[in-house]
Image 1 (spheres, one colour):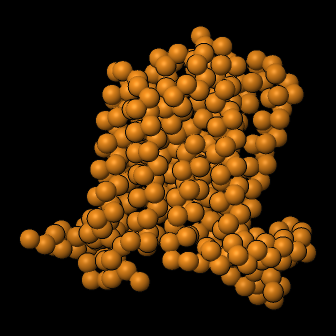
Image 2 (cartoon, rainbow over the protein chains, first blue to last red; image 1 turned 180 degrees about the vertical axis):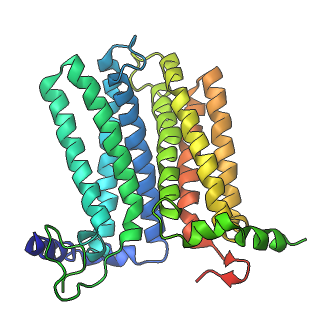
Length: 170
Length: 157
C-alpha cells in the first residue's frame, strides 16, 4: 500500500491554487469552521434517522424521517470538499496519519452499512444498521479530532513496512 | 482588577497540569473529542429539528423530536463538563479571548432559541437557531487562532 500512498500524495499535490488559497491568513480557520458545521449537519440528521431505526419515535412512519437524508448527504458533500482542501494543502499530514486511516476506514464502513440497509430493508437488520451507523460516525468524529495528535514525521530506516505507512515516506 | 492570580492558581492545579501534560489520550485529546461528539448531539439534533420546522420531513410531527431531547441534554452536559475541563487546562487562553465570550453568548442564545422552539416552533426561530449554532461552532474553531495569551506568563505564538 505504500506506493499507493506515495502516488496519492503526488496526486493531491497537483492543486496549487487550492493550496495557495488555504495558505492565506484566514482560509484554514474558515474551512475548518465549514468542516465542523458540515459535521454537525451530517451527524445530526443521520443520528435522527438512526435513532428512528433504533425505535425512537416509532409511531412516526420510518420513511417520513428519511426525508432528512438528503441533508445528511449535503453535510457529507460539504465535508468531503472541505476535507479535500486540507489534504490538497498538506497531503503528507493525512496520507501517512494513522488517525486519518482509521477515520477513512470508518467512513467506508458507514457507506457499506448504509448500502446494506437499502439492500436488505428488514426491520431486524434496520435496528442493527442504526446502531452501527451511530457508532461509526462517533468514531469518525473522534478520529478526526485525533489527526492532530498523530501527526506523522519522516520515516527512519526500517520504518514504513506495515500495511499502511504511518510515517512520511520520502 | 486582573484575574491573573486566579488563572495562575488554576494553571498550577493538578488537574490543569494533567490536562496539558499527560501523554494519555484520555486527557486533552479525549476530552476535546468528547466536546465535538457532544456538539454533534446537541447542535446536530437541534439542526434536524430546525430543518423539520422549516418544512423538511412534514410527515414527522414536531413533537416527535421531543423523544430526542434526552440525547440533546446528554450532548449539552457532555460539553459543559468537557468545556470546563478545557478551560481549566488553559484558563488564561480562554478567558482573556473575546471570541470565547462571544462563543458562550452564542451558545446561550441558541439554547434560549431551542427553548422557545419547543414551546412554539416558528421558521424565524429555526433560522435563528441554525445561524446561532453555526456561529458558535465558527467562534469555537477560531479560538485556536485568536488567542493572545496562552498562559499567565506565556503569550500565544
